[in-house]
Image (cartoon, rainbow, N blue to C red):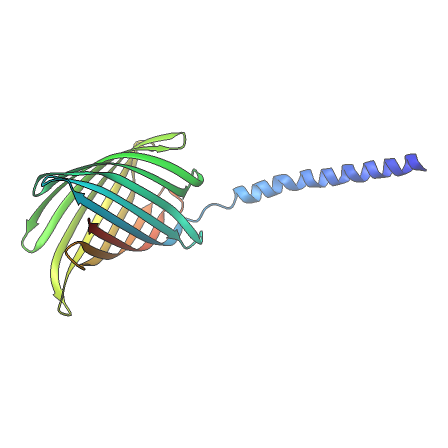
Length: 230
């Protein structure tokens, strides 16, 4: 009787194991067939601070947060520190270091270290201020390495609206990655800004992004940028 009970128990255990093993591939396949969404609505907030060391050099520090509607939580946090060298009224060099943590195609909570140099040339045309920023980045994302080039052209104009002095602006930025060896991202933004005091200014903007690589890559974004001098 005892031997029969043990044989029955062993057979049932084997059946349970077979059922579990049969379910595992289906679960894995189901997860693999659930891609990250291509589109998302996001909210971005950035704070930039600068401190003049002398007439030609500023120390800069900034931080930023991004919220993804699809993920339902903060998907990006960064902190950046560097310098701005004003060699001419319309020419600035900005080397900086950035550390960030984000949800990317490499996996959740992906840390990134970034070394970058930005060169910005600006001028005035009629009532418009025109700037062209060329940015080179060396990115360290886990075990991955990437060189990235970004070019952003911006137009800005000061106007009076509702008895307030504000600025309206538009810019377009394109991205090139050495890893995939092609231009893969474009961002275009429209917005308005106002100087709150001699030390603080605020920009509000809408941004649209097209990206054929990142997930999500096609974004509609509302953003705010606060700049201060201390």
